[in-house]
Amino acid sequence: QVHLVESGGGSVQAGGSLRISCAVSLPTGSYYHMGWFRQAPGKAREGVASIDADGSASYADSVKGRFTASKDNAKSTLYLQMNSLKPEDTAMYYCAADSGTWAPWEVLAGSPDFHYWGQGTQVTVSS
Image 1 (cartoon, rainbow, N blue to C red):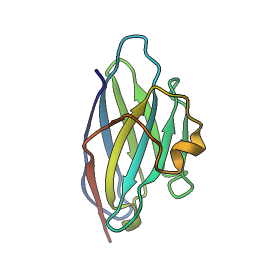
Image 2: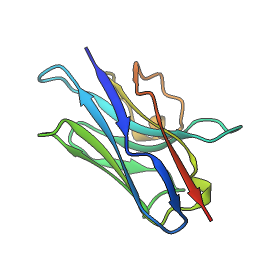
Image 3: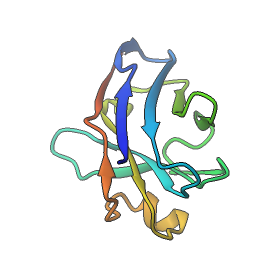
Image 4: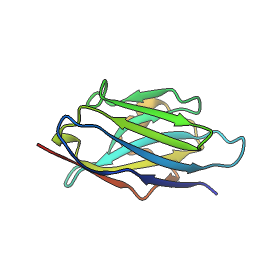
């Protein structure tokens, strides 16, 4: 089975940094496309980062240059390092995975039909 568990959210000051994690359980030898998403109150879900099986990442324009997604295969963990945080980054952040073939633009559109989702972790940025 595939399991995703996010952690590391919290409250930070504008300009600060935060790293959130997604513990991933995947079948041995499997290939999954991963993604980080976020949803703010009253807003549609948006894609933050699209990560292929090799760890290559594509980012939404709103976070490009500030956020970095990475994978630690030894720890079976996906990370999202968030720097220079802004109040506009406040949202519930989700990790998701899917075994299908996805282009980064499809993931970054924010609403791909991924099969597996984590429970989310709240990130709040104060001014």
